[in-house]
Image 1 (tube, helix red, strand yellow):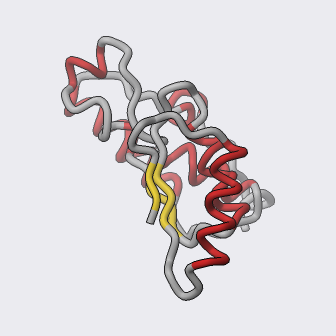
Image 2 (image 1 turned 90 degrees about the vertical axis):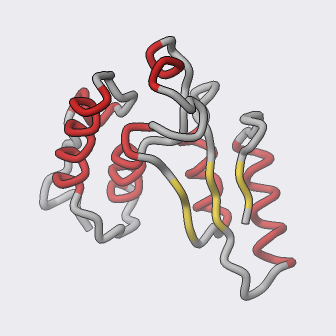
Image 3 (image 1 turned 30 degrees about the vertical axis):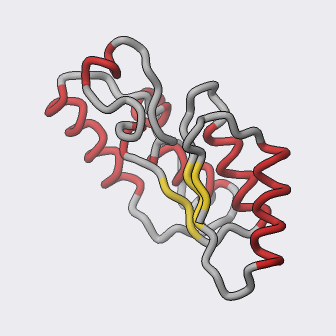
Length: 136
């Protein structure tokens, strides 16, 4: 298991570390979890997937991790990689998630209502753009 606790990961190191972990720990499910502090969370997650991470973690709307409170979120603090953005990335790349993206979008919008803040998800702002032709 690996996470980006310090929020300093970059795709090159993620790729190298994940490949090494997969090679040296056969039979161990490698989990990747990244923060989006410098806007690299999605790129780091994709690098981990390409390198063989079997499981990836994300949070609805990017909520969770840092910020620990809604106040920090409103002040511009970034959190975890957004689940809905990650699902769209994976589906468009041909990685079948089995997750209903429309339901996740509804949940993300509901989270915004409950928390009273705008989540950082790009999919919530622009739509997912997945069509039957782009859904695997």
